[in-house]
Image 1 (cartoon, one colour):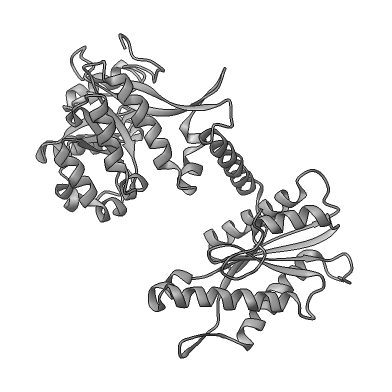
Image 2: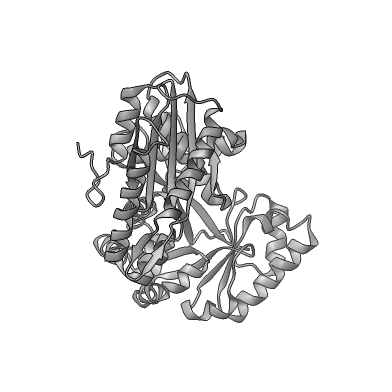
Length: 423
């Protein structure tokens, strides 16, 4: 097991958790330290100077750990520009609470950096940072190191989200704490599933999309689910964790691979959700083309559903290439959040999927009705077809027909299913 960071020579994350488990101190303070705006240092001075900066920062943190301010402490580099300081307080006289002492340590370290700035070429730079604090008193049980590390990591994330210098785990309210703990839980589950270490598997379910005013089902949307022996787990439980871990491309490939096998034997078209992570993946285009070719599927049968944001326009060349092969493009969840009408022509949209919240309120809210009506008019002006999501009953279906919406998707048409009739 590698326990040292290659760049700084400091102990790494594995070493930290191992040490926390080994010591099992009754009084422990753990500081997670994230250097602010480090990316700008890399951009302005280059990666070599950025690496030198990290080495210098690590050395200063180590010097501080060995200073008179502490006793029995050690510095660690966790990843990128994130470091940690762990201090065992059993042999140290602490008159204040551990939280007060931790806050004092943060201030002392800030002063320590100010007194001796880091040199970048001809400039003296005093690093600024955010800090997540975890501490314990009589903290026992299994996985002591991992639990304390996770608490520190949660506090550090919250400090970054709120853009404040420091926050302690014990200051986080219960709802935020549960949110982060759920994310950690699902991150671990997802990793095990993707590595084949779980009884759960990821597989597509298929939901019908009906041509409004007919009985025709010309296409289906392929929706990822996590499936166990008796459970079908919604993607809302794990996709946020997958995005944060950079695992969406891996999940997308499962959907593409499995869906192409199903639809090679069908006449219906199908749609797949992709993200900016997929578009940025250099192998994505090659993979989806190879799966279409292997399964004798014309790319014109495949619609790629994309959530609109500024990032997709930064990757528009990838979308344009996919369009050249015949793939169709749908803008997903349209009508809420980000929309850049002036740039729609750049990616030549084929479909606009009207956000489900507008459809659910279509009969109850005049604002939703007028918004949907405007979307239909706009789609027609750019030669795009409209698909309404969350169509839950016949009354909504009838109103969509009246408005001129082209397709309906939702429980009134069909629920997501593991298989397709006649497949």
